[in-house]
Image 1: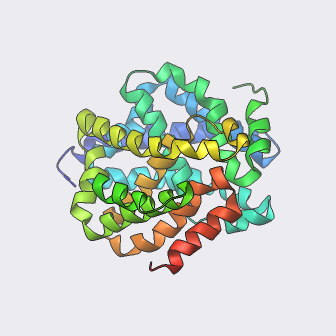
Image 2: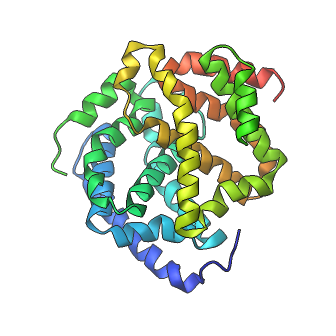
Length: 159
Length: 140
């Protein structure tokens, strides 16, 4: 990887500030819900709303940090790990949840982050909130099964 | 990578086995050719707008290969439309992460998990696990 692609000072501050803001938005949204599936749904909606409202900050968490070489990728990985950990309690909801592959959480958050980055890259950040139902269903399906994940995703939300 | 994956897929008759063979081939390619695999994953993403577009094109290509899984069960029609792109992107990230840490030796084992992860929405967790274990037992 080209570690000279971007100097650390170019992206570190922007990434950390945006990550802190996103964490607050997501955690505030999650805290408003009692049940884990509803918390995840609220968190996904909050993340998509954050990206739509501030594409520059969202870009610093996706494309910009990835363009920063190995250190950027490590930060990106840390962010995905943070949100991936929030999915782990879902494994306890069904007996088969314990048997989910270890890569599940990282692959789910990574896939979702990539979809956000793609929309940002083509200037379609405004479409992101409309993806919320699908994104929630995608993230919850391994833990709840398809039908229940869909039901939770379709439930009206304040986000 | 395309040639390796398509050759592997073509060696199998049923769609789940084709996907399993393709994933296994992709992970084996990355383990055998980490530099080339890095070009397709972390370095593409680090390559600015053009690199990210190329990465997106690769993800779309592999995502399209998953679409026939929707025809396996009528209930699969309800799967979210973002599913294939998100899973392909997630799996690419898993590969990129191993490569970035110099842990390409772990990729063949990670392939077994990736097969299970990708097949579960289409065939259910039990069948996905059975197929992934079959591939584990057959030489990984």
